[in-house]
Length: 403
Image (cartoon, rainbow, N blue to C red; front, side, top):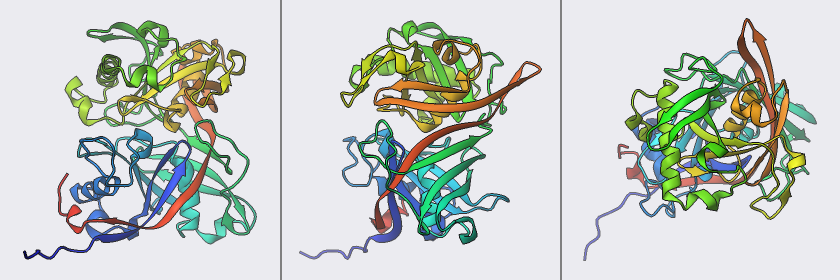
């Protein structure tokens, strides 16, 4: 029996990194095959194959993905083409079961790994990295056209990865990386750059089959739809299992997301939501209450300002997306939003909220001029760590496929 010759796999330099409560495969733009160095079907096809999608089994066994939205991610970095920036950061949310990569938003968690990767891989000018201390890395987030400033600890001229900073949702402590999301109101296509695209802090959102819900629709960090937990039959203390195994509940959240996306001007018709899974996000909020986090650790109502649960890529997130945390911090700083009211109302510069894995603190600086709110920055701490580095391999025909 004769065998047709098969081409060897492509071997592409890559780093597998954790950033916050997510992990993904990081590439330098210059290391990608020529056809994947520009946006388009070849790039998407390559990243799909790297991650192991589309996988009808939903497991991503034949790739680097971990079969959850938090672990089905790819990042492409390059020296910045923008003045006063060090690195350009492009994020791809890779669908698990469908053949597409969503480029419509940022990943706030993986943002914590961008500075460390950029320094370690020669994308940041050596003059900007102290021998010991903190390197300030100016990141251009290319998906949403925003600046993120990362404060990366440096020891003996190298990125310090180990430390005692603990982040709920991450098992082991690591070094703290503080992130500043500058001017976080997202200038999403079709949303006119307004923080509140409808012009209201609280909207009435009509969702057929669900009802009319009070909603705060905000573009900050990532476009997000906030609703009250009680209005949709929840308490805000739920863990993943309470929702992710309930097909009816997931369909309800997708309906809320689709109708909210139309109201925000992100899509023209609810049918388009299926091709825009990464944005907007849906989250529900409630006043503080005691609950037990997914790790078994108790969270006390007195230790938090509010409860938030959020969905990403059609499932309740195990912790909190970093970009949604920016939206939470921003909305909490603006009196009258549902997030602010859940936290007790009034002016505030920071909130600590409870999520399924524990708690997270996020700060935001908001100012009101002639009735218009602006937020200059949102601040939070994450951690990041290289898990593995070397080469990722993919069959050569992956590039010839078109997604």
